[in-house]
Image (cartoon, rainbow, N blue to C red; front, side, top):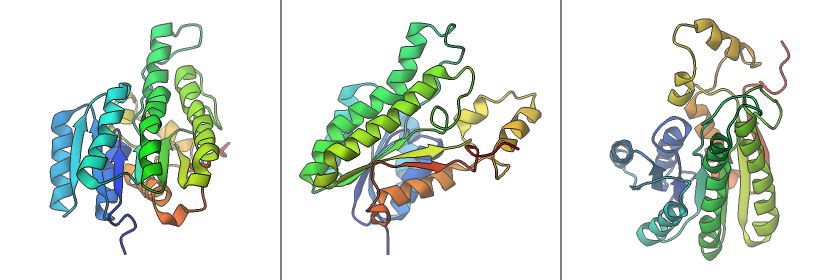
Length: 256
């Protein structure tokens, strides 16, 4: 039996990596999809792939930092599919790197807006729709960075991702009694296009070092993280809320 049969899900950051993998997996599990991303052409290609699976998907291009975009995704879910059951607030990026004293305020704010404020804006519109629908599951992509490990040069990203955990806990406490669950997914290193772009082309030892930080001695795949997101989206996790679920290959506990 399909785990998301006839449920409607919003997936942000759907044009690549974890978001793309989750959108395809959710579709295979019977969900109707509202796909959010900045690249209209890429969203269109993903819609075509999902429709080829026999599922339904609609693209809503825009910037997750814009509240009008968050509202448009929810409005589309309601108008096209009759309601909202799942929201995977996955979009985010380490937009600025550097020590605390070297990050300029603009770069700091850009990262906070991309990773944290966007999640708040999404939830602000997703929660009322889920309440109207009798409940639902909110999922946010946080990180082990800023929660179990501090990395030099990642202050803005760590602060934003740690802030997501606080947002999740508050949402869980505020809306759990009314059927809305909220959980955070904490990936380790994942082999996504955006992460690959951050690794020096001429330094294969860099990738080996990062892999070695994990107990499993490898990076995760977008598909593996999508499976974890599916668990949080489905009724299999119906007694989970306010949780920070590590899916990090053991990077948080490894010292070898």
